[in-house]
Amino acid sequence: MTTDPPAYLTSVLGDPPIAGQPRGRWLVTAIDIEEHRLRWDITDPLHALGTQADTLAQRNDRHRIRSRIELTLAELRDDPPVRSIGAVRR
Image 1 (cartoon, rainbow, N blue to C red):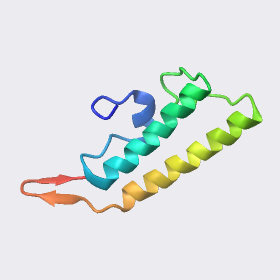
Image 2 (cartoon, rainbow, N blue to C red):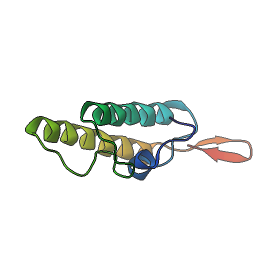
Image 3 (tube, rainbow, N blue to C red):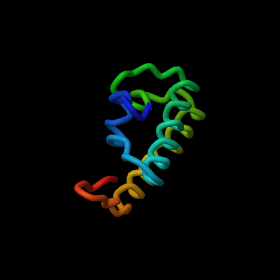
């Protein structure tokens, strides 16, 4: 999943960070998205959460995942880059 993530994941989460805690946060959220897709049989190749939610349970789950995505993106923005010789990694 992190070596060649599907377009629907990178469209909402961006590319996976190189290492460390940011990569872990990205991966946990990606797994949440994948579980949501499996639970609701979402096969849309472009939209991580599909294009519609048919039931209240699905809408609630979708809202939970969107909140997780927003939190993850905020945490990834706030993480300072890890510096190493000749490169800056996130």
